[in-house]
Image (tube, rainbow, N blue to C red):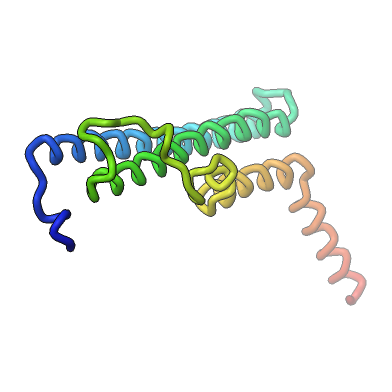
Length: 153
């Protein structure tokens, strides 16, 4: 810890706390969006299983992609505020400056956030699940294996 990190005025501590609160809100927004996505996926799947919903399961991909983009937006904002926090901590930002317009970097670009591990693994897994369920690939694979066993392969 450097000398700059050890001595903060009450206003500087308040400024850092405000940025921490924003970072927590961005993380909470991302968590809620992922929860909404899972709820939408499970609810639609349950309706299709009971025959209460007649549209193609592939239409579910559209809101999932939209939620993916929205989640990536919040991830980007969270990363920008984390960088602002670090800049504030080392006194590179004016007191109570909350602007992130000049906060850029490798990990704060939108595409980096869109294809970060936490984003693409979660959303592509759901999209692949939809495609597998819609095309009944699992049932076809089981039928193929049974046929191969019956024919002695």
